[in-house]
Image (cartoon, rainbow, N blue to C red; front, top):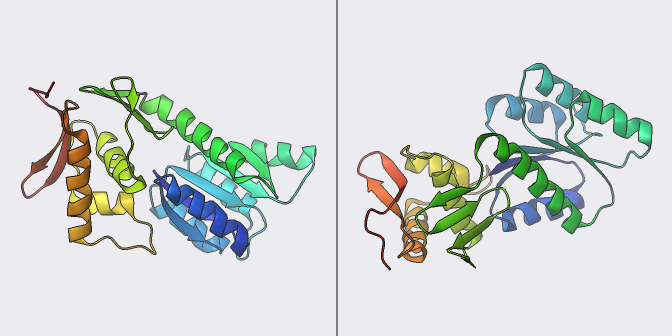
Length: 226
C-alpha cells in the first residue's frame, strides 16, 4: 500500500513513517499543506495520515478539498487538538478516524490496519491463490493454515501483484508501489526481490510469471507442487 504522511513535527513523522515502512508500505512524507494537497490530487494513495496544524494549508482545508473532489481515500487525522467538538467537526468534514497526540505507535498501527482493511473489503476481500490465502490490509499471508513469513519488501511486491488480479504489472509500477519519493530501487534490486519471492512461493500453487517486454503476472500454477 502507498501512504502519504502529512506531518510537520519531525519526531512524530519519523516514528510514524518508520512504523509504516517496517510494515511493508511505501510512504511519502510531506510537511507543507499546499504541497500535500497537490500530491493527493496527482498521486493514487491508499491512505492519508494528516495533521491539522500545517504550514501552507491547514489540514482541515486539505480534507475538505479532498472530499469535494469526490475522493473516498481513507484519512486518519493526527492532531494535538482535543475535545469532543473538535473531533465531531473533523469527522463531519470527512475524516475516517482521529488520533490525539501523543499516541502509542501500536494504537496508530492498529488504526491504520483497520482503515486499510475497511477500504479493501469494499473492493478486494481476502484472496485465495493456489494454497495461499492473502489478507492484504492486515499484512497477513498463509500457506494452507500456516503463516508465511515475508520481508516487508517481499510482501510489498506480492501485494502490488495481487492487487492487479489477471493483469500484468510493469516493472515501473512495481518500483512505484515499493518505493516512496525519497527511496530508490535499482533494476538489480527488483530482480533480487522477485527471485526471493518466487523462492518462498515455491510449491504454494502461486507463481510470479514473467511476461517478456511487459512485466509480471501473479497466477495460479496449473500443476502446483505437493
